Length: 329
Image (cartoon, rainbow, N blue to C red):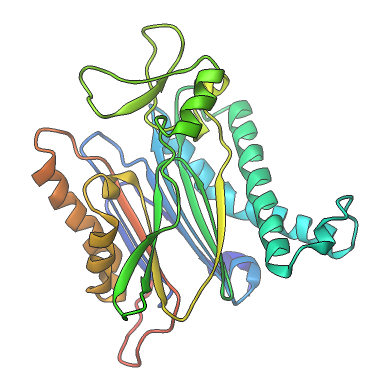
């Protein structure tokens, strides 16, 4: 089938829910700050390959954040696929100047190809955003968190502070939470060092204790509560970067599902709580249940603070039990 027939793009103007067969469940809930700036994408049979699935979540911010997130969610998957195919072809043809590549183990070769793919894709998108005539990304941007499943191999790329968490059975058969990504916040030592070397500043304002932001050298400018993003070009010369963190994992028999969620979830729900909530829900309702739990927790734990947009994708690795009935998008 044509790739577009296998594509599930979920753009969220308010509350959106979808179940893509037995592969994934997605849900987004608008916060209390205006338009929902989160976007979700699930693409089954990614690149017309039956064993590939793409899941991506994008959390926009700033006055044009919803446009930036929508644009990135539209173009990142196809550009990622194009770059992967191009880099794979170069290595497959042996047209590679790095002779060390052929000496790497197969797993390391796969990781090298996917890492280069993710780095190139994010760099290209960030550059195109800066030059876009109709999307203003000067003081607006988006996070980008993506998982590509290829058979039993999973590649995770992350720009920003959205998070991916794995649910896996431990040695005792209990379901455990394993964080797959780093929340790229400005106060992380390696992030703060890079920002300082670029004349940026990292500190908490008096009215937001505990919330570290990267600030421009001059006073009066607004700060950003993450150290990596696509867009936000007013901050790029002060240590903000668009480079993704990339990791790879072989899906084991005990690995059950992965949760991709924006910080609206993780600000009020722990990794362990999220895994338990999702595992106790029917597949087609799991993302919605997690988001609704987070919305209630937000009102309980952060009274008086406007709720953020809250979005999640639950990506499953194994076929459901025979009693499971799939739902359409």
